[in-house]
Image (cartoon, rainbow, N blue to C red; front, side):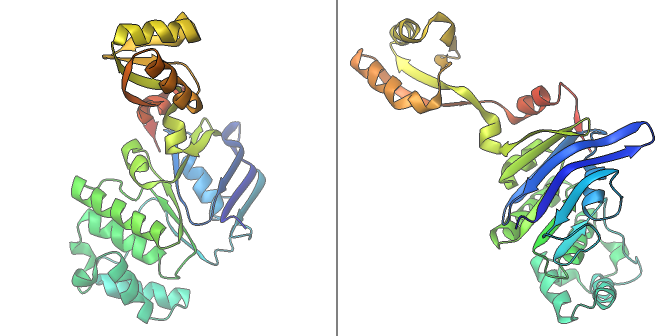
Length: 296
């Protein structure tokens, strides 16, 4: 049973279609990054997952249950909200009573998000990073199998962002399934196992970061470079080989790397580097979304 399943999920606001026929699956135990340009339908999708917005069509299942049944699900959508005059610990105690969670769980989650030493201080004195971490602590109160976080690093300084990334990695390593909405491509690269990209309400790509970045081709660095280029053009055709930055970009399936290497060596060429060619994730994102800027 997959933690998140969307089938033909659609949301209309009058004539505007915010999400259209969205098919999406988040696998158990992975950290899944959900990216989308401004107005793509990303936050609307998360709200439908949690039962905060009713779909116009399609189906959503969380842990095999329909939206609204949040057993085993924790979430932080569009930033946390707490009582400013209560301490971090007391805010969580209020939430624990409301959620019928044993109070001893409060100190457990404060430790998880590294806030135990500031737990007695009023929420109103917290930095933005601390507020975000307390929001994650609240989402963890029920010890969820699935955690959904909307822009958890939004507005944080570099140190706060690094702390939040480390926390998400720890949660993923612990066996929890984490779905993270983010507009920061570098962040997704560092913490996510797979990525889904939504544009104009449709899922336009879904794969591992490595697969999204991979370009069907090889990067070859060899000497003499001219000899390597001449041999590869003869074997693969002139259009398949380009000289770029002191090496060769070769339009060939990466699975043929061993064959290419052996042939070059037999031709008397010394190969110092041969690897799958990769594209910058930002370029991939812009290509997939048609050049739109990334956002919420």
